[in-house]
Length: 139
Image 1: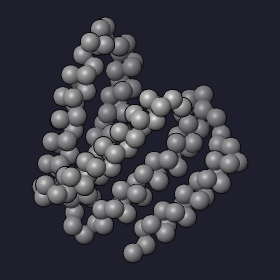
Image 2: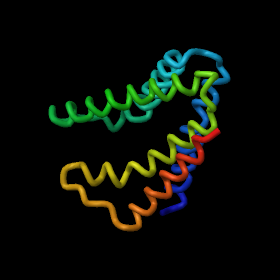
Image 3: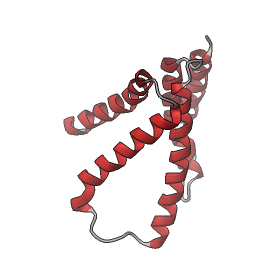
Image 4: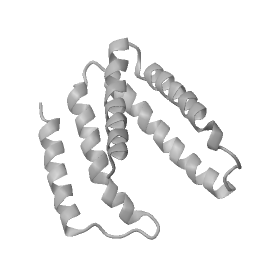
């Protein structure tokens, strides 16, 4: 990976990790947190992407991405609701979500059309991730 790619990854990781912590400090409900953060995100994305948004994508792409948007919206709602809940330990919750995201990728690649089965190394990594989630979830 190039230095620019690594820097981009670091910015993404810090922002993704920081917004729920900042949102919790705002002391608003999960639905408000999710709505405000995602609305601001949509405005920033639209502003940065506007020069590149030339022709509309095909209808099939709109349907597929619409489904992805619905799934992501549900996930962000649940994420923000959990982070805003004082009964949920925020740090461990965010780490568990991050570990599960990484562990889910080989499985999702496998079940997608034209996907390939996880390698032995990925399966071992998934087993370690399962242990990590178990240990992180214990209080």
